[in-house]
Length: 615
Image 1 (tube, one colour):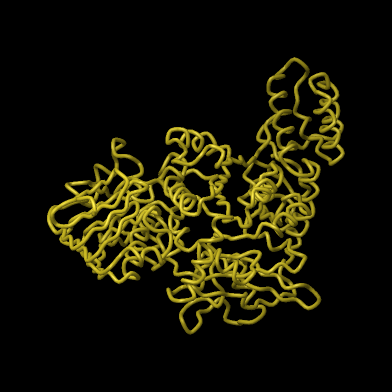
Image 2 (cartoon, one colour; image 1 turned 30 degrees about the vertical axis):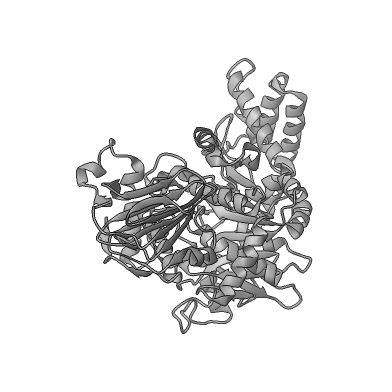
């Protein structure tokens, strides 16, 4: 917390050490002192004592000033306004009435879904993918960047590898390199760069990838927005929130460059949602069809769950505002307006407002206009924990924050905001909770959102695709693993190189069956005709680009193939077992999967007799 020394002592210490300051440092210091931040310098010792710490402190101030539009004085002024509102307990939604947003429901497959996905695939050629990846996996029990966590451990595909495979396959199919932007943080930047380098960018071109590093912002000590110090010459810095992606896209010129290169849409994805691209193309297609400038990909929300609700807020004399209302604000808003009972279920058992999952499609043209007018700062907020009823001091330092989904708060020119609802397991399965937290959520019938539940849903999406194409799929009975429900099979992995859309899956799967704890992996231009996999067997077929493989009347029913094995208590406690397995509670081991790898271009056929070149 800041010291309580007088302004005079701060000025005296500053003046005594003035020789350490560059002209830039001096100008910044004068601005900060003008904003009543004398305490930043009051703890400085006499010249020659701890000068290295003073210089490091000055460097930190410069960096924070340069990374925030309007500099530190702008940050302090914004903080004072928001803190004053927080102190009075003002209701940000005073006078607003919540109504249903403009919703397109694609939670089931059908003609509307197919049309949206077809339109979205074409528009994906003019889309850039933006991954917000500032977090480590510590909450999961994983000591590394979350992008390095495998989305599945049958073949150990990491989240970043999975996302890159979608972009690579789509770029190849559409004949246009799809840009990838990754927002890192101080915690994840080095690890992300190292992972990309070690994996040759997962097959993407180096200039196809842009890395934007998020900086921290100073913490706030009290209602007067004094910047908080841990010790003299040590500023407390905190994350500013994932809304910084908008500021970085603007301040680095990345958004403008993407637009110049023909990008019309931005798809924003969180770092560990392996289901995102199942729905992304259809959502982009909806934006094309309906003219949405901002499209929230959403799910049906269970009342009371810790997921914000997307609502249209209506207020006489003000433009309608379609935004995410955080779950802790939604219930009181409903009670005060349209629902005295609060956040209660509708006739289908869901909340009347769809759940926000931070998966967004934004049209580039209005986005650039908003960025220019706001300098990329998206609707900051502050959430101080007050120490007492006076509401002037804090239990711990606060900070200004932003959320990327709050962009519509800045829409002032009639921009069109909509929501597209998808089946939850199809589009959203976060990997964020450790096994203990996940098991507790599962016991309360909530989504566990663990590494294991995310992998479970990843395989489920594969089964959903097979069922859509007409294959008979019989699930193995669900079992608990560390208290979290898991379906042992069939475990289905359909790589993006096999199919990007449901229409492609339908084209490439004809009949057949799969059942029990079996595994099917398809990679490349592969077509199945009346293929059966059963009895815990595993079938893996991969084809290089330029090869087309047709598999006819093949029956795979012998051998354990990929075997799921729960970890013992000793293994769960052993540092010799990789963390990415311990955060799941199981491993999947290849005990003899049947594999066909076609490494030459051309047309090939596989039947019960083996592989042969098609005539």
